[in-house]
Length: 624
Ligand code: C2E
Ligand code: MG
Ligand code: MG
Image 1 (cartoon, rainbow, N blue to C red):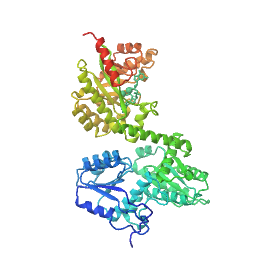
Image 2: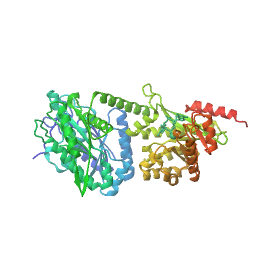
Image 3: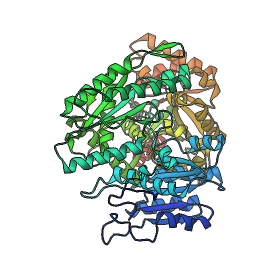
Image 4: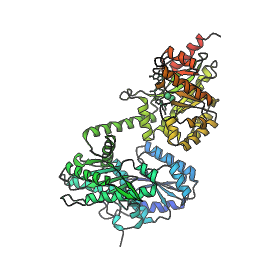
């Protein structure tokens, strides 16, 4: 029996697919499969439309990255990239894979990976886990390839474009029963549908509602509370058993005797997240009733491997009242509502509402504007002076990024950095900051030969600190013209180090080996890991301004600061006090043995021109 592929609308036509495969002979095979010359099947693409996807190919990962970047910039991006890692140089190829994802936030990437735990490890650490990446092991049949391409295309179209009225996304031929397709559409642990299959079903519900506006349905997003704790303390096998049991209980809430009829089983998104599509509802309250039932069922005790365990879940609901046209939007809103349920104290449910919609839209435009600001280099770097207490000498500047945007100027820059971290923009933002700071330092070298020792420090955020690529990027920037790496410093926080001490330790040691200095920032604000003072190649410690705010009024605070200074001394570290606002504070710090001060008392963060004026004024005031 031929493979029955339900065709509804666009299929692969008009889409761009990129193939990266070192073996150029296989390029033609892919092209034959993904972009057949044959005319569209009956009931397929409309008259005049081509049924062909544009399949482009290259042999090198780096060329692939360039093609994706150019395609994105031209407004006609690729939707799907197949990258064959077999026979290629694995590590550079994985780096290229990550770059592909960085260049295009909507790209779906399929990696054909070699077998073996080592490859898996490298993929995890270099590319990361994301629902935009699918890892396949060869051999992989040609039918499967086409099904997979179609379902990924559907996901892409669904996430970005919405369903064109009267059209729709392509549905892969699930009925065909191809084993691999079934595997690709289901979660191996619970056997439940996965996100791809769920999205497909949701898209169908949305389409039905377009024809029958009276239909009500809802997406329920379920996330277990503190599940990681169980996994970490009792082990993954207990965690797995629990997840299967939770899935079973969620499902049992859908089979009910009341008039609600639910056809689809829950879907598992991976981890401890589940999605349910509720159909044929009378209104929002029906969805709320099911959610309440789920909360009760999930919180009943579990008996696993001799332990009696308790769990709660947080639930977010998005209902069809908002007339969604894109399945991905509805799932996203249910997810947002779930996050609100967590914030509200866990163990409850929240319906997605107007207020949340406004907040989500605002957040989205912030992300877009920030992306544009980074792309178009609209950020500015400011510099705040740091002074040596012993002789009043200018030791250098801390660079601090600024974004002069009419809407977002008032937002604290730390909040902007947090958004950049969550969206992954931090890598490009951080690279720009680094390049700009080094450029400025080189300029100042030439302009101020009388100040041969001033340094510039650059803040590194959490995600940058565990990026194995960071040392290479820094080395490149240094090689481009920074003659004295010792005049460049990085500021890192304890929290950032503690999130992954091994990975960040590797990065920091690589940086220190290049001769740049490392400062531990905001010391005392987090869980201070005194051990990291010894183990990391640090040069100085910056006492957070929290400690200094009342240092002159409250003797106890001075004692704490004195103790921190003594500890730093014992570890051979210099001490910088941050947020010094008055001459009294600076004087007290000098007496306590602090080496450097930074704060409004000395100077606020200013642009490069004002920093230069500051240096000239200090040089003019210094005799000789
Ligand atoms: P930070 O690295 O601890 O920077 C010091 C912060 O204290 C700066 O805030 C600075 O303006 C402020 N400050 C300095 N002296 C005083 C003072 O006397 N009184 C008071 N009240 N505040 C003072 P800013 O510029 O808002 O930056 C906040 C945080 O955002 C920074 O804390 C840093 O963690 C982050 N950040 C700023 N620029 C960058 C950047 O380029 N990259 C990264 N990753 N993070 C950055
Ligand atoms: Mg700092
Ligand atoms: Mg600080």
